[in-house]
Amino acid sequence: MAGQGPPGRLSARLAAIVDALPVGPGLRVLEIGCGPGAAARAVAARIGTGHVLAIDRSAAAVAQAAAASGEAIASGRMSVRQVAAEDFALEPGEQPYDLAFAVRVGALDGRHPELRERVRRAVAAALTEDGRLFIDGGDPLREVPLFR
Image (cartoon, rainbow, N blue to C red; front, side, top):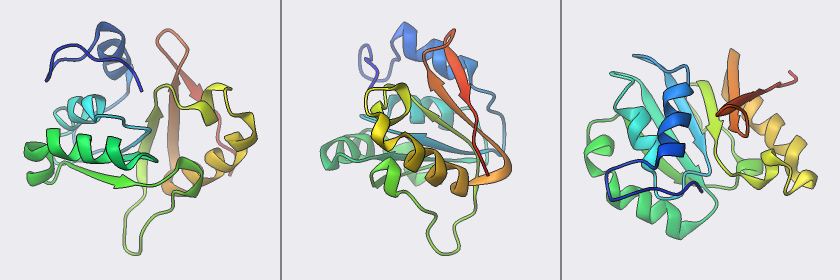
């Protein structure tokens, strides 16, 4: 989870990451490891009629994200789900996502290499054919190749 400043504000680092994401109106975005949901809310504010699904393995993080994201959730621009990244799968009838991003997710940043391929396969299966995955660790992001 990336740090954040005062409630409703992103840390400079997280703001730079959100600014670097290639998001725009109408996109479907998956945030992996959403923590308290600050980045997901910032992305939701930029996608108009699009949708952000924020996932985290932690029930506490998902509860915190949901509690802080009432407006975005009520508008239909955001939803939250408790699931580990390596176990993520689209629900029946759920449309694939255009892009995914992760900030400080051990399975993607090298801290938990034993999960990396499982997460990459799960994410690839949840994205559109030309969907893309971004993680922190670049300047400020880097794209992770997905093998389909």
